[in-house]
Length: 81
Image: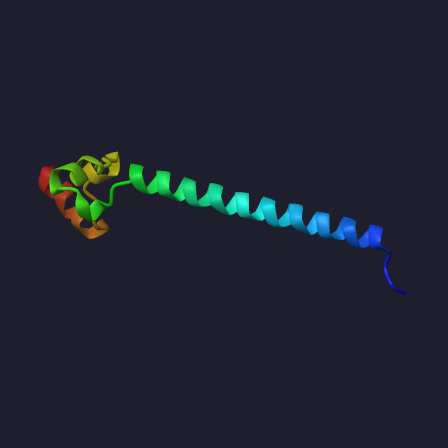
């Protein structure tokens, strides 16, 4: 069965619309990549002072506790008494 000319025309129109949409999407994606590249700065391009501003040091209460073994604890208690 051969498709009618009307069906072929509709298929060609749909194909054209899809190709145009894909091309527009590609252009939008490339524009977005270009804008992102203009805004971003690589860490290797920054000086050390600026990179160090991004870091932070966490402090936890457990860092200030001394944990002793059981035998060391007994010897400390005996000497204290």
